[in-house]
Image (tube, rainbow, N blue to C red; front, side, top):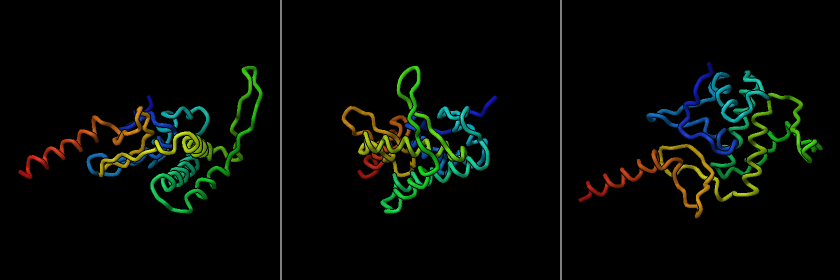
Length: 179
């Protein structure tokens, strides 16, 4: 029996899903990637558990990729692109021709970089197709990220049911107590 994924937001594109391995619960920071058991949960959640081991080296390299992506997404650090590039240097894409037609295969000199590299490479596609839709939740005590897929691109919360309702409730409380 495998452990359940405890994170509050699942199903985002893999690069944002990797960022969301850190979250706040009950006011306390949580980190799914604190150990290899958590790495195994994440690998399973993103469909990479058959391809990569949940060992110490993979954990270390996946955390390195997460940090590089976090700096890129959350900070205006000029070195952010170089950090992501350093992760991307650990793999390459080889074009292939299969019975189904053209394809691609990811190759790694060291497979323990595979999950982090896969997330970093997928982030390039988000930057290519929807850079203005990559968001951090607008709630001040939330650290989660999401891809805004709303029609008009105005989604502000990781979850309307959780963070959106918290914000509405605090605005309501403030209005009621200002009078």
